[in-house]
Length: 129
Image (tube, rainbow, N blue to C red):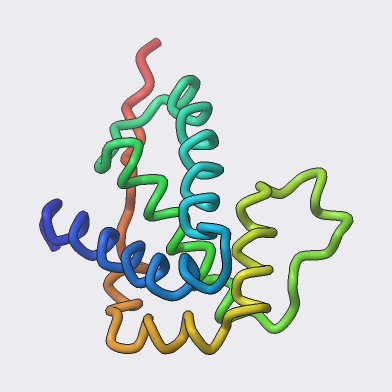
């Protein structure tokens, strides 16, 4: 899969998430999840030594979709003890799946999860001594 196809797949997944959870009540949950991930991505890029396949916005969308798909496969939600150590976006994704599983599953019908799971969003640079 080339870079454009990867970006299109990530954008498709995020669009499906928006359709599933952004109009269920007065809050825009997909946007909230994206805002959290943008903050994490900005901090991450400040100190890592890698080449990025995506820009910050696309990488943030990738992580939104990644966490939602991960929660759809889990049988248990994150434990409250993990709140201190896990990203808040994981808890939001877990809550979205717990509350809106049917809408999310319906929107993700036909989504190529296998291809999505094969995406590597960064490549490590060689260490320079």
